[in-house]
Each structure stands twice: as structure tokens, then as C-alpha cells.
Length: 472
Ligand SMILES: [Fe+2]
Ligand SMILES: [Fe+2]
Image 1 (cartoon, rainbow, N blue to C red):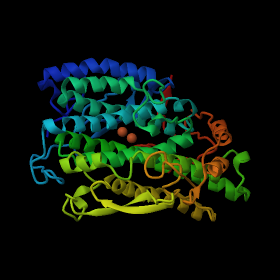
Image 2 (cartoon, rainbow, N blue to C red; image 1 turned 90 degrees about the vertical axis):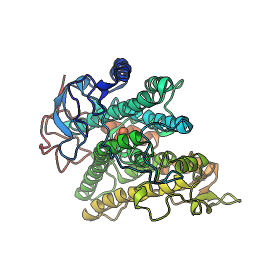
Image 3 (cartoon, rainbow, N blue to C red; image 1 turned 60 degrees about the horizontal axis):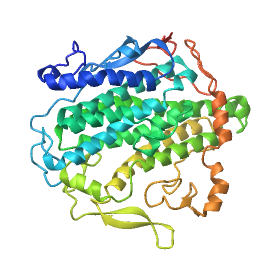
Image 4 (cartoon, helix red, strand yellow; image 1 turned 135 degrees about the vertical axis):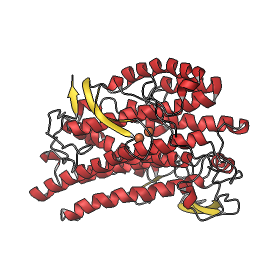
């Protein structure tokens, strides 16, 4: 394994100094990245933040913790260790050696996959840029910034691939990744969920739980790629992504815990006036973030995705654990569909064209885990209420159900019925205004906002009241 070079301007474990052209190209992209970070990144001014920096990819100690000024964060290029004997695990090239270069015939498709992944990374930083001003604690503030700098590093990871393997077109795409912006009218981000606002911390936790989790599953499929540099890049990104999942999971835990506590103490469900978030509002935010995240998996059937699989560009979640031929040419899968009379149903399609459904199914099973956890918190508090995932037909803009409206239970509604009742299931302006009214910053060491419980553990063994962030 190549040792990480930490003395270089761009820390890396890809021997960047050996390729002067590539190094110069990335060094000229660097100031553009910093400009983007300054203008589109976190708005709260800070002196320094207790951050984890990737310094290597080995099993021990890839992460270094310390207070750093965010501007000086060492974004770097880190690929997981290369396995010299790695072979392709699926598709028509199964068993052949993994590719170290991009085969000409797959160049356009691979570039597209990398650009789509790359576009989401800076998008979330843009979506979250104003959250620092209303952080419920320094601990949470630190976690927000950790997620932000790592999404910045994930952008670096994708830009490295574009520069190193896709020539002039790749460099142009790398520029475009900084040019498009979340929510922009002229140049929006590619995927819908990444143009939504993240205006408050409940949204942030839901986003890191549901939308970052989509990222985890997409990275999981790219980790299987026959194009080895992409595979190794994604493998390392997944390690960082685990922290983002933790922020979302425990963030929602803590909101539910605090609400449950106030409900029990006051023997009421009506806790808004007591300064915490009522369970029905939490459910609405969950409904929203879950349904827009389901859209990120694309249509139930896709010939593009079938082709990506057959070509070896993008595999399945945990491909090697699947007990089939990893080619899927004769297999089938049931996918969501509409019946001829507009009812919710299922159809059987070839397993290859149904791969988006396969991935979405894995994702949904994972999301059930969160709901179970949050319901355990309610049960432990002695409360009968439960949270749940809405039906896959609820609030969809992509796929078989995009043309219909349905309740969270999966009952089809007319457009008029939907308009009339959607406020019961999705955050209304009143809900959003209420949530915003709770978002008052707590930037004092060891203190926390009243609408959320403190975490059970701090970061890297530090206590909750540690000075995670020094504001300027
Ligand atoms: Fe990411
Ligand atoms: Fe992430």
C-alpha cells in the first residue's frame, strides 16, 4: 500500500507527485474549490472545529482528530488499498481482472455515474450552509461541520477520478460540479432531493438519516465496480459515510427521546407549547424525507441500469453475498407498478431491468431499522404511539407512482382529496414555522436546546461539554 503523503499541498495516497500533469491540474482546481467553499459552504464564522481528518486508509488510525480552522482542512485524495488480484464480480466480464483504466466503450457511462455521485456531495454542503447559526449545541455544530468537510472531501474524490481518467471532458465536468448549485434556477443540482432546502435541524437529522443513506447504497453499488479506482474510492468514502449515518440516527433518537420525556412528564401529546416537537410533526418530516429519498433510486425498471450491471460498471448492494450467478440473465423480480385501472400493484420484470427496485428494497429494509429504534424509545417511555415508514406510493415524483397520489397507508387518492389532506402527512407552513421558532442557537459549552436530548456519547471519547467548536 502507498503511504499517504501528507506533506503535499493535496494530501493523497495515490502518488500524485509522480504525475506532474495531474498534480498541476488538481492544484489549479484547488483555488476554485476553496472559492466555492467560502461562498457556498458554512456561513457561521468559526475559529476552529474539533474535526476528524483522514490521514490514511489502513485499518488502524486512518482518522486524526484535532482542532483545525475549517479553511485549512486537509481535503485529500484517499483510495482504499489496492487488491492486486481483484477480479470483476458480476456481469458479462465476471472473473476477468478489474480494470485499472477506463475501457473506451464504457467511458461515457462511467463518467456519467461519477458526475451524478459527485454532484450530490457539494450539494448537501450547500443545503446545510446556514444551519450553524441555529445549532442546538456545540456537539451538534461540530458534527454538522464534520459532515460538511467530508462531503467536500467526497467531491475531491470524484474530481480526482474525473481528472485522472477522463481527460479534458473530465476536467470540464469537475468545473461544472462547482458551477451547479443546490436550488439554483439556472444551474440546479442534478437530483431532486439535493435541490430541497435543509432549513432546520430536524430536517438535517432526517436528511442525514434518509438521504445520506441513499448515498451509502449508491456508493455500495459503485464499490462493486469493475473500474478499480472507482471501487477503491467508494470503499473509503463509505467509511466516512458511517459517521453521517450516526449523526442522523442518533439525531432523530434524541429528538424522539426528548419529546417522549416531555409527553410523559406532562401527561399530554400536545407538547408544542412546551417547546418540543410533537410526534405527528416528527412523522411528517419523516414522511417527506423518506419519500424524496425513495425517488433518488430512480424508476422501478431501467434499461440503463441493466446495461451498467451487465457491463460491470455498477453492481448490487453486497454483490458477493448474493447467491446467484451474478449475471441475472435468466432471473426475474417483482416491482411496484400501476394496474391498468390505476391501482397500486406489482409486475414481474427481468432481474436486470429491476435492479433499481432491488437496491431500493435493501434501502427500505435498512430504514425500517431506524423506525424500530425510535419506536423502542417510545415504548421504553411507556408511550403507545409509534412512528412508521409511509407506503412506497406516498408523495412520489419518480417511478410508477409519480402519476398518482396515495395516503401513507397506500390508499389511492384523487388529486382533490390529496390537496385537501396532504397537510396531515407532510410538513405544512405552520409546522415549518413552528420548527423554525425552536431553532435558537445554543453555542455555549455543555448546554443544549430544550427540544432535543443530549447525546449519550461525545466524539472520540470526549465528553458532551467539550469545547468542540471555537466561534470567532
Ligand atoms: Fe458523501
Ligand atoms: Fe454523507
